[in-house]
Image (tube, rainbow, N blue to C red; front, side, top):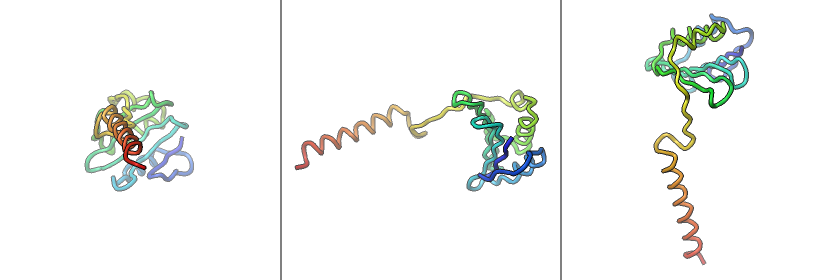
Length: 136
């Protein structure tokens, strides 16, 4: 297993103590995250704003197997238990929390993807019309 905290990989074997210290060190400012990985695209991760709660996700190999915890305001203790359970490979982390498929919105969160595509299409069409009819 590999533990990464705020972009820095923690050297050596991962321990329960390292997990606890790492999660408690997350401040919510800037890049404030921790990832415990079994391999490429197989991991559990959290991002933190301790005053607002922690977010928790896991990925089990592919985009179709990427889940987020339904509770968006986890405590540090809940995240520590989940990470330690993931390290122990005992499955409790998965059964003690409620999970939902992660939804990826590649076109932005502010509107539907179709509206964005239509706006881009109209912009391109307008530029083409302007170029054809108004440039000499």
